[in-house]
Length: 122
Image 1 (cartoon, rainbow, N blue to C red):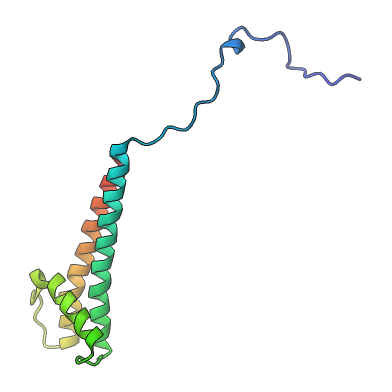
Image 2 (spheres, rainbow, N blue to C red; image 1 turned 180 degrees about the vertical axis):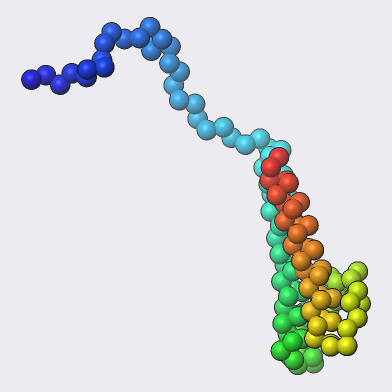
């Protein structure tokens, strides 16, 4: 018994013109730069949100304010949230800190990730 392909027939005339597979297209230099810029913006937004979230956590857990690390985190969070200080004035201090530092964290994440996603689509 012979092993012949039932679909095999005479060669198609266009088979001889098949091109060899093309190597994958390398991204253009401009696209790579946009992706790197998007990654940098994404990372900066994440770091800003981490500092703000860390300060909220340290404040709510009543961390030692005289500690150097706590002071550094507080100073960085104050600088990052300087534009939104006292947007919310509450009688409860914990809720005030949560809202006044949480709002900028959310805005940094939304804006940073939005810009990075836009750059990655280029």
